[in-house]
Amino acid sequence: MRLLRGSAQAALSASPRFLYGAPLSLWASETGKAFFFLFTVVLLSGSLSGCNTQALHRDDIYNPPVYWGRHVVRQGETLYGIAWSYGRDYRELGNANGIGPPWTIQVGQVLRLDVRGTVKSDSRGGTTAKASKRSTNTSARKSRAKPPVQTAANAQKPAVTRKPDTSAPLASRSQTAANITWRWPHSGTVIAGYSASGKVNKGVDIAGKAGDAVRAAADGNVVYAGNGLLGYGNLIIVNHNEQYLSAYAHNRKIRVSEGENVKAGQVIAELGSSGAERPKLHFEIRKNGNPVDPSHYLPSR
Image 1: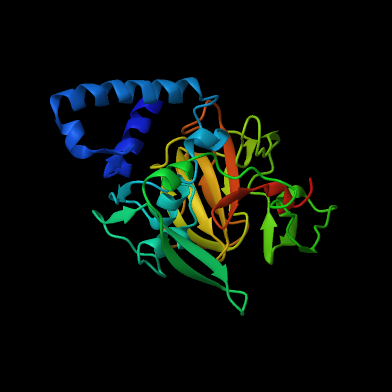
Image 2: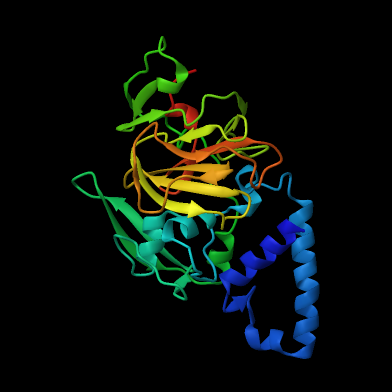
């Protein structure tokens, strides 16, 4: 039932001007209303039957890159969280809507999802963004397909410039990869690893006891702290630099606020089971909006 309501809310928040090519005037008619009801039931039934888990991070059907419709900003939302839920890079989505640093949005603001922004590296190694319009018809609908499957070509491991001291306890072990010093957010047993195919998992699941300390995996700034993303429970998203974000899901209690700077190893939450069947930490790293394997960045166990 929760998933059904969430799917309906997601469909409504996107607010497309055209629903699969049919103008809204059609849906306003009596015949249109009946057809829309039938369409919604079929759509949601298909979604439920195709779901192998209730968690969005475990099923790519529910977190594809979305390039159609619109999103109306609600109270408590941030551009980072919205981009995360639509499988988009926050810089790309921001640029597509004329939003730049510090990526501020307002309640009631309408974000177009049918416009793409491209983020390119500049000569200094930074990034610039350029928006490009895409139609809401064939090309946009094709883009709602599954996110890119990780391959040898696009899943290159980051450069590791400092390896961990394997003699140190795991909780204090760190490794520098992609110019960021990473550490494990929790030292519990990994019960589900990253997988880009089959039973998709966009991060790693770490077992623990309710109330255990969840720590920041690297220095950064908290850009999202809340429970508005279906399937993640109480979620924290930390921005580390222009490319990398990390996420900490299913927390019992959030101990930091949006806009707060955090240090690697700092306690940011209490481990819990919000949005999950058991106490655990679901941890993700995303590069340019795309999930990457955390084991390539975190110290070896």
